[in-house]
Picture 1 (cartoon, rainbow, N blue to C red):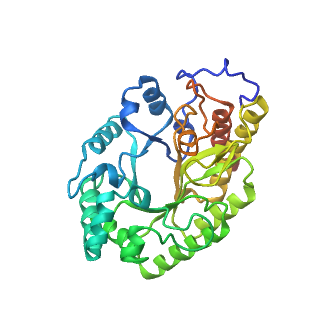
Picture 2 (cartoon, rainbow, N blue to C red):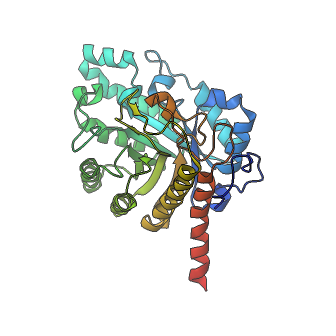
Picture 3 (cartoon, one colour):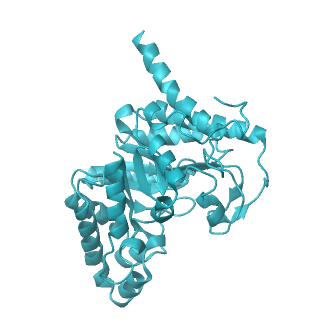
Length: 357
């Protein structure tokens, strides 16, 4: 690990080892397509390090159906073309999420509650069907659980109008449209909030018993430096016992804290120190090792960073606070966290070679 390197020593050019070439599972990053298209350096780095593409916002409902009954697939088509050109997997994020539900959908559902379920079916089947065989997997439902603790998020138009059944119906509709797609339930804090995690596991196990076509669990994995590794290992191992694919779907590691609400950042640190960078590198290394040791190889859907550089991180925009949560800095230079993550990936290669001797 390049722990002793200064920021001036860490070059952003492509001489650094490719992450995905050192990984036994897919590695991805979330990208906002329009600014990405204008940034040649960012594109080169994305192509060098990643073989999976997740749209930051471009594939959400409020983007692909911004007005009533009218799809706009222009950006999604561009994403598919980009991924095909560079031999990358496309991961669809997401089909149903309360925060990206267009206002016109909410209003129409309030006026005519019986309209919403048929709309959901038509939306999912048209969307997933259009990209059948091109989008490898989908976050079918995102953040359907309470922010904290046990239970389901009830203050959404989906739950209020359809009830809890909307979650399983979304999976059924997506599976009908593309039987080969890997279908995920995705949520945050389930790696450490055990009440929330248990609600998720009970739902998944119920779906499996009743034949609801869920095939993956997405751990967003927006974690803090102080989240204990043993809790992360326990939840990943327990989730893997379902036999489903496990995706670390939105990874970053922060130093500060927040209350999970927009603008809710709490700045304990206003400057980054060399010691903090070293500790973050170790945490990234430990996270990838935990993933590889607790999730069986055939269930490792991959690790996706929610943006891989501090310049573009959503953490600063959403929580209105300074932080340094990613593996590249504001100048698109690799941080010690990059080398820590790389060391974690390489440890799997060393272990595999040892097992052959």
